[in-house]
Image (tube, rainbow over all chains, first blue to last red; front, side, top):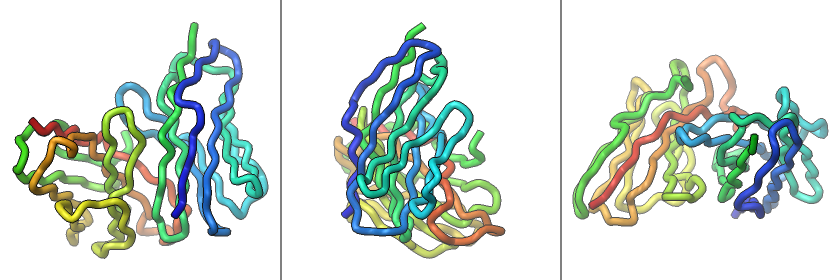
Length: 113
Length: 118
C-alpha cells in the first residue's frame, strides 16, 4: 500500500522569505503522480502543483516549485517570496495509475508579517 | 470557484441515523471522488466513480455507499451513523470528457459538507 509522510506538522516563515515543505512516499509503482494541495482556513482544497513521476524536470508554478527525487521517493515543495495568503495547511498527495489517491497528514504553514 | 458543488454545506444529525451527501462535478468531468477529513486530519480517500461505474475503492466503511447517476452527479450515503463519522466530506472531480481517462488528471474539490453527529 502506498503511504505518504509529511514529517513537519507545523512550520512558519517570515513574509518574503523562502520555505520548503517535506514529503516522502512509499510505493512499488514506477508510474504515478504527485500533487501538493493547499487548504486555507476556508477549508477549500486548492491544487498548487503536480508532478508526473516519468518526468525528470521539476514542476514549477510561479512562486511554487518542487524538488522531485524519484530514487529517494521525496517530493518537497518550495515556496518563494512567501505571502500572508500562503498561510494554510499543505497536503502532499500520491496517486497511482489506478487513480487511488493518498494524502499525507499535512503541514500547517504560517506566514508571519 | 472549482465548479464542483456539494450540498448541503452543513448537516447535523444523531447517532444511528442515515444521511445523503450530494455532489455535482465540474461540467464535463466524468470522475467523482469522495474523501473524509476528520478534525485536524488528512484526507482519507473513500471511493471513485468514473462515468457511472465504480473505479477505485479506498477506506470506505460498509455502512457507507455511493453511486454516480447518468447525469454524473454523485451521492454518498452514510448509514447507522456513529460519533466518529463527524467530519468534513469532500467531493472532487476530474477527467474532462474531452480528455483521457488516465490518472494524471488533477482533482478539483468542492467546498465540502460538514457532518456533525450528536
